[in-house]
Each structure stands twice: as structure tokens, then as C-alpha cells.
Length: 586
Image (cartoon, rainbow, N blue to C red; front, side):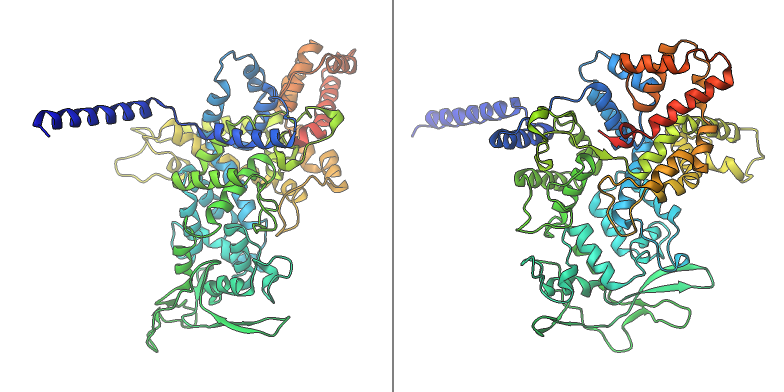
């Protein structure tokens, strides 16, 4: 072969490689929302299931506000969005909502309910105070903390670290009871409820073995509660020794185990020298710290993509947050006899989380961009009945969570916006000026909350932290009234007589309506058409129909006296707050 021939072949090879690279660069990778829709729509097509059409702008606007920031839109937002001619306005709105401080507060509320399940410790004073826990969650979502890191911090926290101490609430609210903790770790972090495997292999689900339950239990069996009476603090302490054995209530078969994740390898404890098992030896009034911690080992090995069920579980739960049910449902029943409705979809979502370092905010944004999420809740063909919920062919009718309901009432009445504006004004006024205090003098009071160089973003966060904290105390009664029992998931729409009475005549609702900025504004509108529009936009996030305009006009007709008109408008607004249209996310 001549030198020229070699050069020609090398040149041809390089040319071909460059052409291949150029062609691949020219190809646009299919975005995740499109891949999701392709899976859902192919399954519906194969099953002969008709898809609902797209949600109209008003329906989408309300839904995405409730899911991403936890409140209905303002009347101004409900009026402006349908009139916006931009073709990308939905994508722009989603990005804007994800960037708002309220997104972190909404996600903190969602994951608070998901992880704590509204539990109350047997001795409430032996628990982490709820505001500290919620602040930790809010800050975690503000930072867009990866899910694996958040889980690692929860499982590793014993309450002593100031930064992550509140994360110990996961243990403390469960009284640091090892069986309850082990069960909930399996349910909430791996998607497997092994409760029935505590006494024997689960007779219903072959995959749920007693050895798996006790392997998980062995990680936390040495844990116990420690109360520091002098400082009134609560911690998760751990013994240095303690073996785990079990026997089947059915067969009498006995076994012993070290810590082991389901489908994982048994983890052998390192050898310990007698009387040297502790970094800090436990004494009366002093918490011991073992040299080797099984709890710390759990925090290392569980939140990883290699752990069976870890990625799949959180992908399924985030999908359920946005769609009202999981791809696997119930959420804690991942096993062969309860397969995913769309296996390829669940694999895709789990893979995306792993590829993006468990970016929860990013996945929620992608889900909101799908055609599946943006479908109407109206049936495509009422004569054929409702498609199966697992088809995701129609947007689900979902009850507002207690938090969404409470904050939306505050939004509708104008109390939330009013409090935000007032608090922001006060914080700006209280901010230290260059000549407001002597050189080197410390900041005190309200001024300490707002640094000299505070940006508008920092101020927005501080304002909302203050307002959401203050208003939450007024909403606790509502949250309790509309919540399920502690330890039960908040799913399904099960209105009760007590709930109806609360909305009709409770002192809290009377107070909210009495202090309503909305009523003050509406009572000054003389034109019945303008009044009807403003009521429906403020409460239901849509324009009224002609019949609804007529109804409002007839009700307010002849009421020239301001107080009487305000009372009639109050009754109209109150009636809409009681309606199924307001109580449901549709």
C-alpha cells in the first residue's frame, strides 16, 4: 500500500466520522414531555381509549397554580392569561411558577404530608417542633435539593446537627419506634409496605418476605428516643449492640439477620472492642454515640440508584402529585402482582431522575408540559362513560388538599395578598439605612431579618416565610378539619357534615369573610356584568356563562344600599367557596 493510499483512506475515514457527528448534532433529542405523551397515547390507542381534548386556558391556569404554588390564581391572572396571544404562554407560565418562592412552600407542604402523614408524637413535646421541620423542607426545596440528598439527611439526622437537626422529625414523630420506622422507610422510600411480613411471609404477596422486613428493621432496631431535659431538646440515640432474630407465626421457622435492604446483600458490622463501642459513652442525662452506627450506614446505602425501588418509588410519587394517582397504585404496593399501568413510563421517569441527580423541580416542570397533564377533565364521549383512571386519558378530578383549600380561601378573600403587601412594606421600612445605626452596632428586631444588600428575591422569600408562618396558625383548624386521620394518606374526596358546617358557619370562615379585601372591592362595582365577571374570576378562575351573569344580575338588582349589597355579594362568594367546582382540582 502506497503512502498516498494510506493518506486517502485516513482522509475518507475522518470525512465519514465528521459527517456522522454532524448528522447526530443536527438531530434534536426527543424531549421528555414528548416521550411521556408518546407512551400514554400509544397505550390508549392500543386499548381503543379515546383521549380528552386539551384543557382550556382557564382550566389549565387554575390546575397548574394549585399544583405548583398551592393556591388558585388571582382574578388579574385569570383575566390576563386567556387573552395572552403568545403560543408559548403555558411553558412561560410553568417556568415562572417554578421560580416563585411559593413553589418551595407548596412542595414543602406536599412532602410534609407525604413523609410525616400528619402524625403526632405520643408525647408532642418529645418531637421536633413543626415550624422547624417545615422551614428545613422549605429551604431544601428552595435549594432544589436532590431527593437522594434529602433522604440521606433525614435518615442520618439524630437531631444534634443545627443545619439538619429538624430532619430527625422523621424518627421522632414516630416515637423512634423501630417497627414503625422500618415499615415507613419501606413504604415511603422504597414503595413496599412490608407490614404483613413482620410476623410471617406475606401470604398475599410472594415478594414480601419476613427476612426482608427484618433486614430493614435491623438498620433501626438499636434506635431509641433521648430527651435532654435540661435543654428541652429531643434526639435520636443509638445503642452500639443489639442482634435481630425472628420467627414465623405460621411455620415457626426462626432466623437471624444483620441489616439488609430488600434484594440486597447482608451488611456485616465491623468488630467492636468491649468497652470501646462508643465515641461518647451513654451516661445519665447524656446521650451516647456509638463508634459504628447502623442508622448512618442506612443513610449511606439506601438513597442510591442501585437500591431496588428507590428511584422508581419517588418517580411514581411525583407522578401521583401531578396526576392524582400513581403509575403503580397504591403507591406503596410495588410488586409483581400489582404491575405499573405503563411500565415503560415508570422506567423512563426513574431513569430521568437518576440522570438529573434526582432533580424534583425539573421533573415536575416536565410533567406539567405534557399533553397528558394539560388534558381536560371533561369526558371525550360521555355516552361511553369514564375511561379507567390508570389510562390517564382524562384529567382526574382531585380534591384540593387541606392546604390548597386553606391558602386558596386566603387568596380569594384577598387576605393573602394584603398580608404580603403589608409585611413587605414593613420589612422595607425596618431595613437598616446607612446612617440608621452607629458603626458596628448590631442589628436587632425586624431589621435583623433584612440585610443591607438584600435583593428583591431575598426580600420575597423573607416576606413569604413571615406571612405563611403567621397565617398558618389561623388555618390550622381548617387543616385539621379537612385532613384524614394521622398515618393515613390524603387521597380520595370524602366530604363530611362537619366539613360542610365548618365552611358554612365556623368562626374562622366568618373571620376570613369579614376581613375580605375582595368584598370591599366588589361592593363598589355598580355594573352587574362587571360584578359577575370579577366574582367568577376571583373565586373560580373563569368568566361566568351568560346564564350565570343573569343570575348575579337578578340577585343584586335593586340593592342600592352599600351594606345590603355587600351582604348579598358575600353570600354569592361564600356559596362559590362551598361549591364542588371550587373544592376540586379539575
